[in-house]
Length: 277
Length: 203
Image (spheres, rainbow over the protein chains, first blue to last red):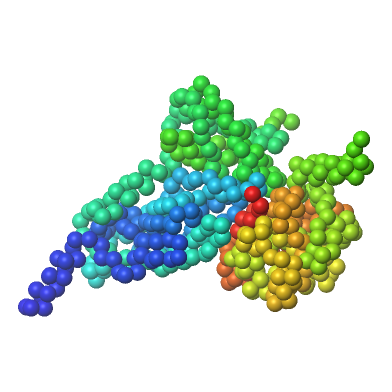
């Protein structure tokens, strides 16, 4: 009977929040990294969002999915309970960093939350109800004047329960969500004309765009350090993107993120029109 | 009346400027240069016409450079290809006070310690050779054929990481290009995205 009461007490204690092992966060020389969950508990078949939160020492940066001319994006190798699978990293809008005439990189300073959707199975057995371990081997390159490869294995435990947002992380995830690039509105258009030495990206939206930066998703297409000349139009803008010296064959689609100054970031997937021969 | 020397200096500056505007494009003539090596000797690209020349941008402190040196991979490549008559020039474009900058004698000590075997190491602390070729990372590899045409510009291999454990399973672009070209075949992957730390240019 006493044992049952103790178990119940433990169960009630656990019911409140995900319990973090001491390995959920790591302090490395230039970053504090922690594995966080948006949900406080697990519900079979429902969405689970985890995130790796980087708090970087001032001046240091990590990289976007396309790091640009140098650097390397963070990578995650997940250790998940049976039946669970991890989706792709949801990359917030990056910043552009130019260190010299030859190089521009894309990444993040200060703080960034890299969210990853986790798909849970329809059934979780009773044994697992007490607590499931979610772990990730994270590797990242952090740079300032020099670059340092870092890594950490982070874990947290979640148990089954009614779907509940985690109050401790709710704001962090909500804020990070606002920084994610979104699909262009349906009535917008993005097209690219391939010219001898550059691409002309024409974005037609609702009003003039006076300041924006295009971040290419695929390396080796756009010359990263070259200035992007932007010409506002009545309903959007025309942006000149110098071609990379690595681009030897024509491309049919230009993918990337257009970050409008003071505004939103849009996912661009624009068909490329070749010059008429 | 300007002295002839004055005029020649202006002409040289103009040539250097024009050359840099064209950078280093695969399929085009590789930009000519003169640089001083770690033994104080002047090296001209034109000295090596008729041979394959590999340019290897280098920063001994960079984790990606260390990947290839601590593993012995770069030294193995240097020995393999110089034995076949290829000229291997390591280039250091780190500005004074930055990571990778070394004095000539420090570099010669490094070569001995690491058992490296380039033909020469070009000291480029002013960064002009780096800018001439558009060197972005360490390592960043360029290959010039015996006719002086640039036939490769890019990464050393296809695993853009700092992990030594990736070398064994990597396709080495430099060896592949040299093997294809020396057998009269076109280089199948002549331009790839170089990976590594950014070259630490002078401001």
